[in-house]
Image 1 (tube, rainbow, N blue to C red):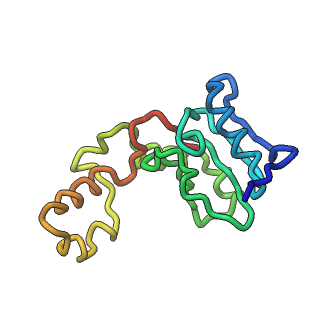
Image 2: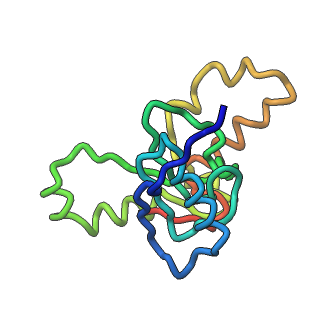
Length: 156
C-alpha cells in the first residue's frame, strides 16, 4: 500500500532559522509531508536526527510516531508551572528568574552535593529494590535533578 503524501506541507514554525543546517530543514519538511502531520516546528538548536531533527517537533492527528524524537531523547525543554496568577509572575519577574537560575543547571554535572535539589522521587523505596548493577542510578538521578544535559540546548 502506498502512502499518499500531502500536496501542501503542514505549516512550519522556526526559531533561529540562521542557526539551523539545511539537512534539518529537509528532515522536518519530509515530516511535514506526512498525511497525519498537522504542524511542525524547529528550535534554534535543531540538528540532524532520525525521523525528525533533534530540536524538531511534529504535531500529528490520529497517529503516534515514537521514532520522531531525533534520538536525543535525554535532552529536554522543560516547562515550569507556577501556581500563580500571571499578573503576580509579571510583578515579581526578577524573583522567578532568580528562582529558576538558582535551581536549574547546565552541563553534564549538576550542582554540588550540598546544593542539590530535594525531591520526593529520591526518597522512593523502589530505589532500594533495583538490581545491584543498576544501584548507581539513584546517585546519578540525584546529580542530574534540575539539570539540562550537556548544555547544547536551552531553557526558557
